[in-house]
Length: 398
Ligand code: HEM
Image (cartoon, rainbow, N blue to C red):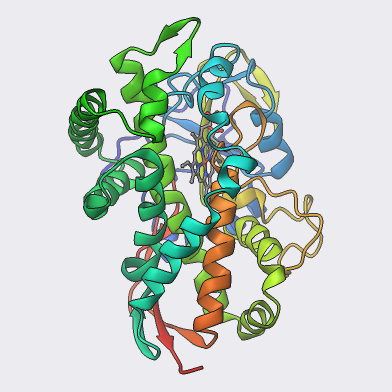
């Protein structure tokens, strides 16, 4: 993408200016997580004049401060480049945000999610039936994409046979810096969701979309626009995130035989391994807007300026974690920020954790031996969700 430089505002010190794009800087292509190690070692905060201009905070404590203070840091219209956004509940601030979030918090509570375990295990086992006991395997297309998508389609009320189409939309919405592409995909997605809502109206079912359609805010049902804004958030959050978590986790295990052996021999450590993978490879990049002038991380940020909060950087901050560079799949405590913090902390975290745990357990019971086939090209990508475009595994017989 060719990006024009925004004029650097006068209050930004020259030493804090770095012309850097979280969408397509070449370092992201090489390694979308490790590139933050260099940025963090050089800057606690820096200002990029690209995409209309935005700040980047690289330290755990500063990011946590922002996430926990939604009166100072707003989620409304927060996007880089800036644009009107009203996805529900993610682009609202409290107290309005609280009313909308409440609609789904019950459906994603630990108790509700626990009931899905047999279904999620069956989806996993069915998919693993398709994997050959030895040879080369495309982990992304063969498992990381279909697994969470199949689970989410069933929860939300989407036809499972069309999941590849949904994934393509989500990828373009979350990874592309081309606003025209994103606008076009948004229109297509919303048209699709509109038809799905009509079908549900004619033929109500026991799924999340039906629940949204019947939910009330301040004593009234949501408008069609609100329903679309809500469904849009769940659609993007539910389809792409666990896929990326799986890719990073299995790449780690494919490259670290000792960790792989420990999980295979003692599946009870799967939950803590999941947390360590989320710390090491936190891939979500959040955005907030300053509601008034503020000093943070040694810089002044003016009212209306945008900040990028790369959670990948926080998990590798030596001020927040002991032996930060040393992966420890039994690390405790592990207060990573991969699910965010404060009012918007991930509503789907219990579902994500359950899916990841089951994937680790079921996969290693069947395929304990595998290695990563080294890609012949740089495979990282940036955007709202960082990720890898290729993960090919060489599976060896048990
Ligand atoms: C490993 C997987 C996941 C990660 C790392 C993740 C991460 C996050 C993060 C960092 C936020 C905070 C957004 C903000 O502060 O602006 C968030 C919010 C959210 N996530 Fe997740 N997520 C994951 C999976 C899921 C899943 C599976 C779902 C649902 C199907 C989901 C639904 C949501 C929703 C609805 C919000 C908005 C909450 C609000 O605004 O109050 N997430 N997620």
